[in-house]
Amino acid sequence: MKRKVDSLKLKTIDIGQKIQKLGNELALANLSEEKVRIVSELATIVSQDCGGVTFMSNHIHNEIGGAGLIKQTGAVLSLGVSKKYINENIIPYLTKEDLEKYYQIVLKTISILER
Image (tube, rainbow, N blue to C red; front, side):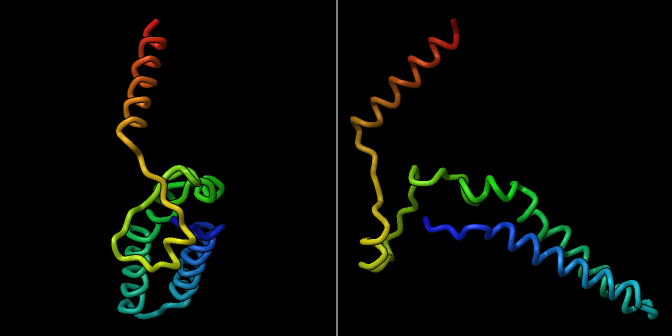
């Protein structure tokens, strides 16, 4: 899953600039209909777009991305990818044997924590 460094930071800046622009427009607005339009746009940004930038700190997003996957520990499988993509993005997989080993680790950890 490719990531772009500082993508959350850049999106936060973009939203902040939109809010700033609308705030400046509101400060100069005279007509009620102008004010309503501006406040409506602000409400949409705050209720929809801001959630996409406030859910995580920028430095954490750079490490685990929006999907919450630590680099090189997860994959998104897709049946519709090009040969180039397959060659660039080696996708690991989990065997039944691996899964059993992880299961045993979890069980052992639980027993240790219970003590």
